[in-house]
Image 1: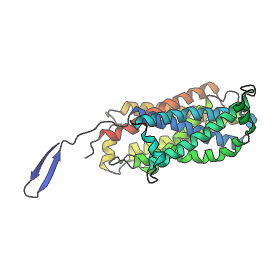
Image 2: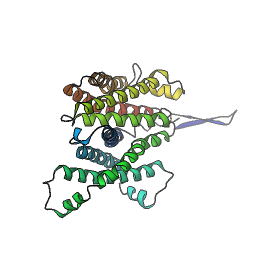
Image 3: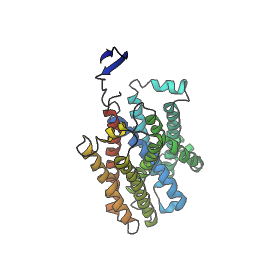
Image 4: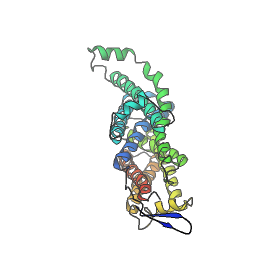
Length: 315
């Protein structure tokens, strides 16, 4: 850092502020992406179970919590790694500070994962009656099968704050005006519906046509709304000079311009066009392609939106 004084005003001019570079990189992107899948399949699954009979979705009862369990453990694993000293997580539970969004989020995510684990065990054993039928633990879990439906409403309720609390952490970051709490909350909720529906599309081969069309509807609406919000920020963000400077990285000639638009086409425009068509005439092959592009495109979009605010100096 270089600084000098202006004698007339006694002001100190500070120059050459160090730029720490990208602190939140691919690891945090993967963290948020996996969390969106883990919560999204629950939210979308709850909607489908409310509208349709279980018989129309024969594998949903056990595949939904299984996908969520895997994604949530990816999320928790990279959360621990990001702490650099994973044992710090113990203090979050032994000495919690409830004014911290990180603490509240960690507690909610842990409870959510615990309930998902219970649902996964019950759902899997109910779907596979011959598996572990001579094992005492499996027998005990099967005897408590009614817990699945009792726990599920609490899981759906927790899925909402768990998928959105990271937006509060981002909004609390100093001098990062692109990350505004309210829009980020909505974007993270839409991301959950995007990848939640996309993940279920990949396992919906034997589901009824009505269920598949509902998945197409959820995917179409969620990508359309999320894309609209990105375009609103991209073209009409006049909030501050810092936001404009940040968005310069994705505007024409910017370092992340190609990645941003590739993400928009791959994760939003293509899935919307395919899903909109499948709402009336469902095409299984095209919808699976749309699901894969949604998963890839969302990761790329999240990666860009996470990195570009960190490219600016904190002064």
